[in-house]
Length: 121
Image (cartoon, rainbow, N blue to C red):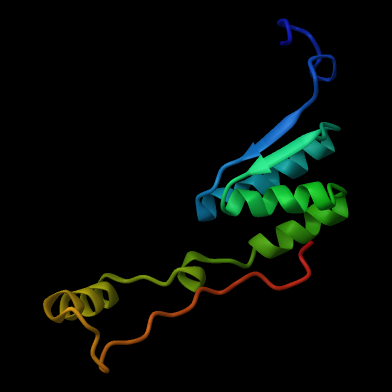
């Protein structure tokens, strides 16, 4: 274990841990760019859920070009496009289903979330 003031490289390496949580993973790309620009690169990256996607991309290509490609995936994503939600849609979907135990033809099918384009990594 490192003593206070001991550089990280003498303490056994640097690890980046990425949390999951959908849109919470988007700012991780900015953090990666800032740390990379400061010359701090990880020896190990780990993550869960959306954070795992960032971890894989960072481990695959930590160069500025690789981080730029990762940023290009996150920038156009918007919650409304990935996980569309409105109170009206939720009520019209849940109430008839809860009352009858089955869906009716008048209920819209759940929309499939948009996925980032292929070729990120």
